[in-house]
Amino acid sequence: MRTPIIASNWKLHKTRKESREFLNQFREKVKYISETEIALAPTYTSLDIVANGLEGTGIKLCAQNVYFESEGAFTGEVSPEMLAEIGTKYVIVGHSERRQIFRETDGMINKKISAVFEQGMKPILCIGETEDQRKQGKTESVLQNQLRNDLRGLDPEQVSETIVAYEPIWAIGTGESASPADAQAGCKFVREQIKKIVSKEAGEKVRLQYGGSIKPHNARELMSQPDIDGGLVGSASLDPDSFAEIISITEDLTKTP
Image 1 (tube, helix red, strand yellow):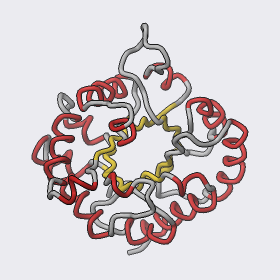
Image 2 (image 1 turned 45 degrees about the vertical axis):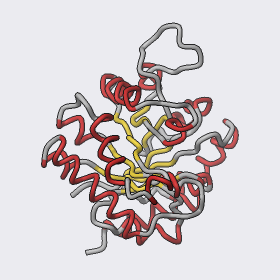
Image 3 (image 1 turned 90 degrees about the horizontal axis):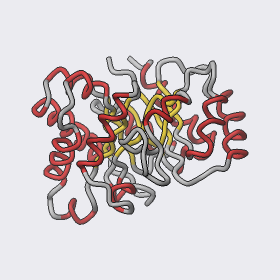
């Protein structure tokens, strides 16, 4: 059975003070969680605050981005070694905002994934289609191309340890979540493609998240889908109560026969 994982993406939110305040409330709310993996992805300036605050909790530290070079003349970038040094376990790679706003290519994303693995961390690879692509019936071809290019050169074991987050771009930050059926269809397609592209075993093992306006009110339906193994949560993860509720719902589902 695949262990569910719920990860936050705080994006450009929370100062160091606000991050500390969040942790002071959040840790208590999820201290009983045992069957669901939790990861927090704060801003770079709060990574050390969160790393220190997570000691002894079992909650994993996650970074929102990384560069693929270890050092050099890359102003403003952060290397995989730097993230690993402070205890980062997961790194979000290929988020639609990085692809669209910062023009990251699949080639860059592929290099980032390899660099993350080289430093003993694991990537959370984000893939998804735009509203126009969806309307044109291109969802499957978009996902297929992203998977083929982003996972290129990885061995089956690395792919099985990658977390793939299906995030339909039209649902990110819009309040319009994909229906549970659409989210399941997207994740099922991703799993089947990984079986074809990499191996059947990797496809069975890989954990798939859904991302896109996950809230406490829709979490149960989304997280109960057979090919959805967790969520990458944006705005709802900024509030310790709502994020803890999503995690608690997921935890309950793992214990439901």
